[in-house]
Length: 253
Image (cartoon, rainbow, N blue to C red; front, side, top):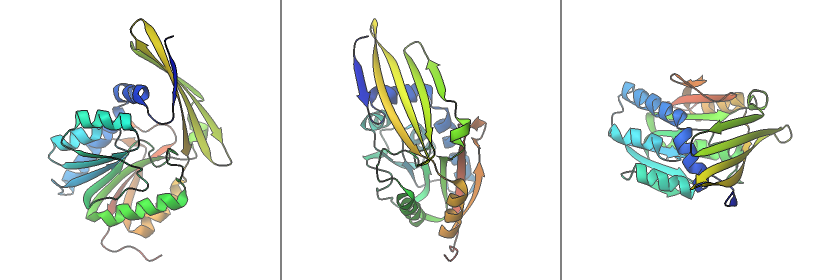
C-alpha cells in the first residue's frame, strides 16, 4: 500500500471511480431528459444541471444542441466535466445556494438533494432551491431529479463491493432514525503502478419524504410524475424520481 488518504466529497480518486464505473444513471437520465424536451417542443435553450458531477449529462445535451450550465461542489468532478464538455459553463458552488439562470430545464441527478456536503442542507434549504428552480423555468419547462427516500434504510444493502482491473471500492451503508439519515462509508483502493492507494470518504445523506416533497411541488406550481427508473435503468433501491413541468398558474398555499 503506497498511501492512505481521506476526503470529504468526491475527491480525485472517487470522482474517477464514479465516472468510470457508475455512469449508467446519469446517461439514462440524459436520454430521458432529451426525449422529454423534444416531446415538449423544447429543441434548444439552456439546461441547468445542479450537481453536474463529471459532465456525463452535459455532454449528451450539448451533442443535441442545448446549452448547459453545471454546478457542483467537487473540484475533481468539475475538472472531469470541463474536460468532457468544454462548451458548457461550470461553477464551483453549492446547488442549494447558487443562482439559477432562466432555463428550459433543470435537473438534479443522483441523490444530489440528499447529500450533506453543504451542511446547511435541511427542509428550509430544499424549499428555497425548489422555489428558485420554479422561478427560473419558463412555462412548460422541465424539472427532472431523483431523491433518496426513507426506504433506503430498509432497501439499501448494508455492504457493497465493486471491482475493476484498476480499482476496488467497498461501501458500508449505516442508517440512523433520529435524525433520518444514511451514512455511506466508502473505502477505495486505486492502482498506482505496482501498488494500491487507499482513499476513504464518508458521505452523509438526509433522507427525504417523497409525499411531503410531492405536496410542496404541487403548491409551487408543478405537475409531475414519479418513477423508479430512468427508462430501462432502475434507480438505486429506495430512490424515487420526479419528472415535473411548470404550470401556468401555481396553486394557492
